[in-house]
Image (cartoon, rainbow, N blue to C red; front, top):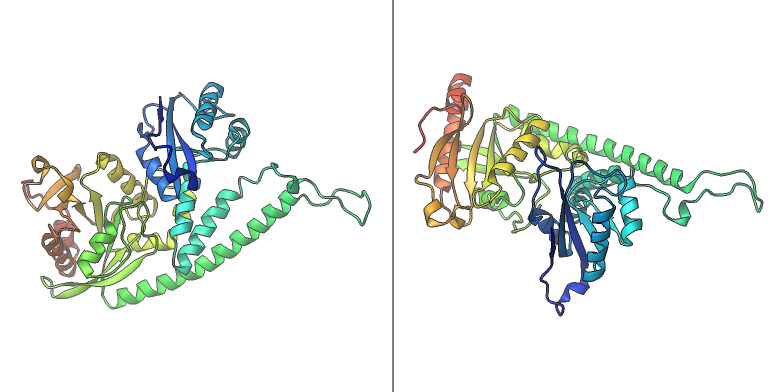
Length: 399
């Protein structure tokens, strides 16, 4: 299926990189966005202008061109028809597939991982965030050092003579990248130890720790600002926030303050190297006493997004941390879809129920009930493990 862009010819699309988006459906068991809406948002967040979308169906990736020669010819024709500057694939490409596609199409080719890394590189603000992104990008680049440019040809040894072969430039590049990766890992390890020291200090003070987690653009930062009256950057875009921000959250119902941390959002097929690089940041979620799983209630892919968040939480060791499900953006729902109550309980697995709060961070809907739910969790934790377990496995029927 091919869908051309409806961007008017006279608009300023030529001022940015024009990209053709490509997605491949491999059938059951694989996540696939037939409209490539999320990839279009990623491309736009990276500064590209999607001008066409092409989807294909295959049983397995083609070893050479990923999509096969016929579909590659179709993509090449679309690139020419739309004057596109590049092509973006919704799935991860191998270095060989990327190289072959660039030769076949005559334009640069990027995959989903590369686009996400570009966005992270542009959005990182803190020293730690910049180190994490650089590490992930170098790990990605290290597998894509291929002989496509003349400066990577083998150098000659000796002085003014055709001596024996010297070290290939590609080998020098790979060695320099390897050394930089080692340095970055050491620096991030020091940052991790500093964070660990800070967490132990909070534990000694008996501070109750709450972390916001959720799919990207679910409204975590907006909710964070609404709860603690902070001014953290929030925008209607993917990965608006990368750096962890922590503030005190006063809970009058419990008569205590808790720490609330805003963390990086998750996304489908989040590159494993990115999760690995952000391990120190994501550890805030793993070490939390309570997670506020923020969900975009207006999303058409709500089930898939929740499942992806749960998958990443399991990967970072946070699967067993108690959760409150915060269905945000309820103000965007149609009147017939509005919840009948501001808070209830839902069974997420046999024998496991979680509190669910319906809210609008922008409009303030449900924030009082959310504070009350957090305070209840704090009081239960102070009462002991038995009371806390009962609080997070409540069997109250749904409204």
